[in-house]
Structures are given as C-alpha cells and as structure tokens.
Length: 180
Image: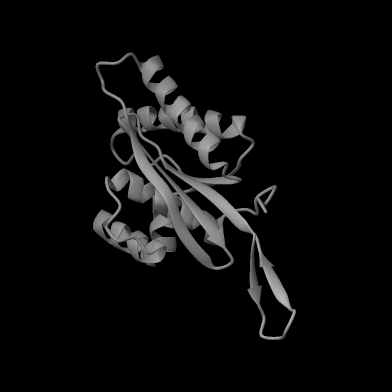
C-alpha cells in the first residue's frame, strides 16, 4: 500500500493496489496481460501470448492454456480478470474453438477465485479507444498510452488482453477482495 500526503501535515490517504488479469482467448493464440491499479493510475506488470499448434491434440492445447493462465495467476496474484467474450461473425467453427479456449482460461481463473468481468470486443474497444469499431493498431496505440509503455504491446493478442484488463477497471464488477 502506498501513502500519499494530502497537503496537511500528518494527513495521508491510503491507496490500495489492485492487480487485474486480462485475457484475449483463442485456441491458437491466447493473449494475457497483467496490470496494477493504484487509485486512477494504471501500470503494466507483464503480458504475453500462449501459443498452441493445430498439430497438437485439442485436449493438450486446452490443458496448456489452462496451465499457463494458472501460472500467471500464481505469479501475479490478481484479484479479478477481464476476459473477452466470443464473437464469431460468419465463422462458427472459429467461435467454437475460441469458446473452448475461453473455457480453459476461465477454469484456471475459477481455481484462483477471481472475480470475472466479461466484455464484448466492442465494449473493450470503446473503453480503451472511445470507438467500438476501432482497428487493432488503434487499440495497441491506446494501450501503450494508457499504461505508459515504451513500445506497442505485441503481439496484438497481448495488447487485446491488456485492453480487457483496462476495460475491467472502467466497466467491471468490484473485486471480491482487494489486495492491500
């Protein structure tokens, strides 16, 4: 916990830190990102992408996603998670694969008792860019600006995961337990 002076001698405000995990699910690429919130300040702790190949058996691909989200949760101890919902447009097969990857990630989150906020791609883009039809490049740029990163977060799946975490800050439910 960080203490900030209020201007009067001896008066301080306690600002609790909240760690938020963001997930952009996908069977081939599941992006993840971890941010810290202290009051209105957001900072990036880490991000990455879990990659699986079509040559690997489906059950093993899903196990890898679950295990790696579990490892991220163990390392950073988030209290909540923002995750993108499935959007399938014309490709139902891709939506089914994404849904399975999303389920594997949610199992890992459930095992850690995380509060879950689910957001559509449009909601996430609106929260980060201010436009629900923003392009990937715009999302990457705004994530970089909001989190004060030196470079654009790559790959774009990781940037989308960080955007989901940012969306949780503005649109998510209150976490069950704040880390002090």
